[in-house]
Length: 119
Image 1 (cartoon, rainbow, N blue to C red):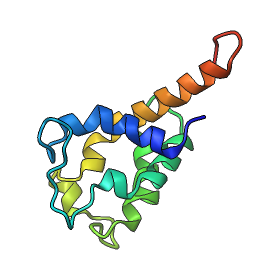
Image 2 (cartoon, rainbow, N blue to C red; image 1 turned 180 degrees about the vertical axis):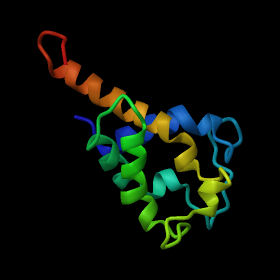
Image 3 (cartoon, helix red, strand yellow; image 1 turned 120 degrees about the vertical axis):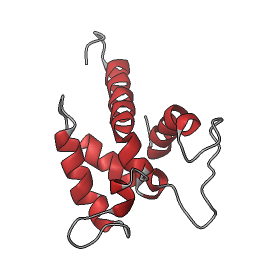
Image 4 (tube, one colour; image 1 turned 135 degrees about the vertical axis):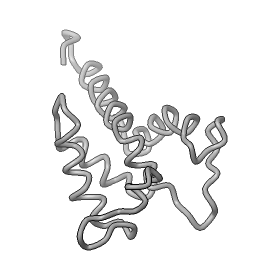
């Protein structure tokens, strides 16, 4: 059975080594007073992805803006986010890879439970 940490570990394995906020070896270079948005909002991110299923990113992104971005200190009441607009939000930057990782783990979990090998 997968838990939240299993998903986060998989995402970190796929993203941290290529993140522009890192050293290329998976180590974060954000200052101590700055938390990675992916880690900060991970429970909500997991919920957003698992409550949607689409071949398009639009439903995921809409749910992300509503559930996660709306509670982020960087977003204004009008929905504007200078961090996102400046392409500095790691969550926004890597969100498609996050969706892919979560959905692939869910699929593997379903396949491992299936006697036929079909999800």
